[in-house]
Length: 192
Image (cartoon, rainbow, N blue to C red; front, side, top):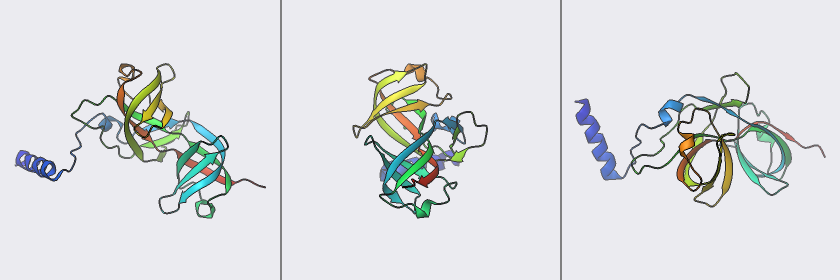
């Protein structure tokens, strides 16, 4: 009976174009806590989404970063577009780095949390995003990958220590990269 129901569900999903998410390496990261670099940044608020608790900051060097504000950011409703702020945040971490095999997708991650490197706490929950792109550079010793997404944006990411087969990835490879959202811990207006 269960097998019939599974086959029927797969047939419905296939005929309607609903993507089937196979069990992949994501399962082993489920409910995981990853360590991220703590960053301090002074920047201008370029955009803000109060409902989703997201804001985009533009630094003086012209680079932008979009952050998800944790519940620790109590003054989020007081932050305005155009304001100069200092932000403390945990940077993105790659939690899946793998070559596409033509049959699967890196799947979904649930309850992934981040914490500052060296912190033994349970961490704070974050969303993850996935992209397909090309490895521009890779550093096995530092566990970092420089990735060029389909949008042409090039960015470097630290790779979590639990990512298996990291050394099987090479410069020029097409890969799936699933990363945690950068998470704001504190945002304060800059005193003028």
